[in-house]
Image 1 (cartoon, rainbow, N blue to C red):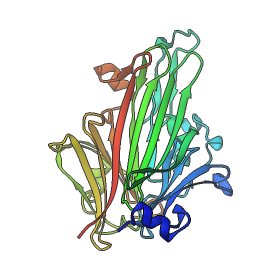
Image 2 (image 1 turned 30 degrees about the vertical axis):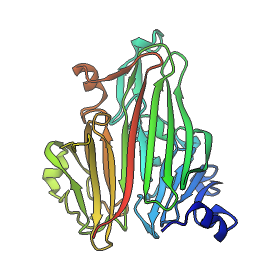
Image 3 (image 1 turned 90 degrees about the vertical axis):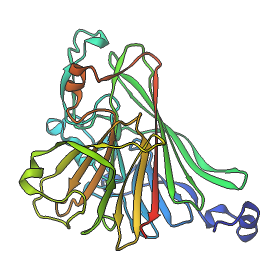
Length: 349
């Protein structure tokens, strides 16, 4: 049990003896220069907010057991990123961590789309890479720390990410991350605004990546799946179980699914990965109206072993199809959309 505010003050001269938020700068290799906020709630929940990587969450653990995926790329400095390298697949050289944000105007695979709405004749089209630009944009850190609300202490951070060009999009993401001292949940609130004056396309997706030791042979997906609307060709070729996970497989080809979920009476979607051997469950909840689509990314390849939970604003068919069928979100001048997501670490028993 977390001591009350007075008792905590009696026990220690500084709140950081139990938990808090600390700003550090990573200092070596491809991560050199990346600012990170270290959150510790005192319950065993600890995670890092990568300020210079869209304020995404990198490392995440509970009671010393990691659940945020760590890929071989590390948390690469965005200054090393070239958006158009490798036919738009350079995003894969920066792909690591519990959350990698996709957007703000494009998600899923890349390609060329019309740009006539920006009214600049030399820019006839926009070429997008995999999952857009947001995940490799630094944030302007507007604040962080600990705030007491009566007997409740909230650890928080807030920052602003701007994706903009002259004669093109001008989109602003304001991200707020909170966790309670003594708590086992992370609350994420994002607000995306068209700060410009031309209608601008908006697509948004969270690539939520869970890894070992939470992900291990026998770990399982909990989700109220009504039906599977789409799956990659690799599903039929490999037939790996996407509900109870196998261990790592050399040479595995990613399996991707679009599942239609049944909303709960409170209007939320909830999915979780459970490891019964560890007695650990990591659950994600979001508002169905904000993210109506959900993808499962199953990556069992040895050395890249992960499962991805992906709430999305759009169907798996992507940008060009959304423009054609009318489902693209067009943000008008100064128009905003908000997204509320919660992560919880729970006992599986």
